[in-house]
Image (cartoon, rainbow, N blue to C red; front, top):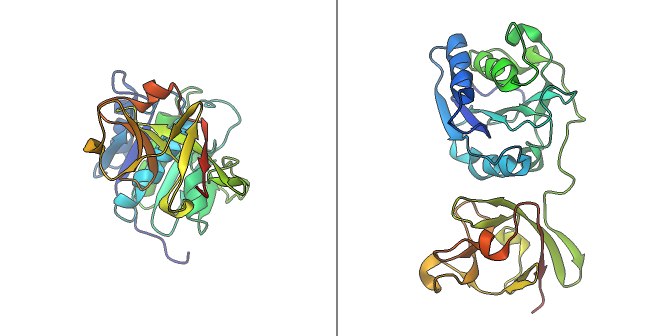
Length: 264
């Protein structure tokens, strides 16, 4: 990583919602530092404090953005505690987030990266609230970075950053793979951490007491309310129900372990 990627737009991912002033405050701080900043709302509807869902959202969409995009992700149940704030520089992108595992998928997929702990108060708000680091730490750092400040100016490089213990499916026996539900979208589709390369030609899923065998190419191949599998637009296997919510039908949520049965 000898050459820096030129900083580009600032893309926001938060669990703030849009009813309160929080998102507006972030944008106001960014624009106060860089009036020319381009700000993109990826989503502000992450379920409150759902770090894994935020991690999945980033994983699913960050490659759709131009090189240099500064992803600023604030899902931060540890705000005000001793948890660190970090800036990650990859060959193509920048990521600013709390050091709580939110960037685990980025670390897995881009091992060639540099991670800096945000400690230089020169680039923070004059007064840092113990409850709103999104406004007082992450937003100003994103704005200064977009103005051309080098990542190393924000703090020291670290290697002991936090990452989830397991982000990939893993074999648990000769005929079984353990996977996980990593996200549930607004339609009730359950997104797994399984990709095509993780799976044999024939397989089925065991989800709680349910077994799902049917793999489809599009939603309307089944009857309303029928559970099936499909590879979604982000490339991950999803458990869905046509014109219904798989999440409600199965009564499960993110973090649920599932089993892939192979050698059928």
